[in-house]
View 1 (cartoon, rainbow, N blue to C red):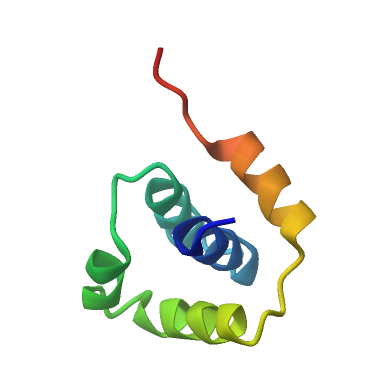
View 2 (cartoon, rainbow, N blue to C red):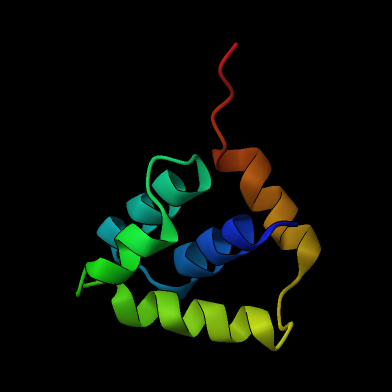
Length: 76
């Protein structure tokens, strides 16, 4: 899994806040960047924590794949 997909998954799972979950899905689909999220004070801390968890490799790749399959939009 790539870094952006993993961070999107971690953001989605880290909060019950609907705004954060929506931004995680936008990140997954390429509508937002990690840089954009870091500029948003309301989610900046969550992004930094997600990056830290990813660096520590504390992530279940199967769960990330399931998240991507569920929320990634495909354009045909």
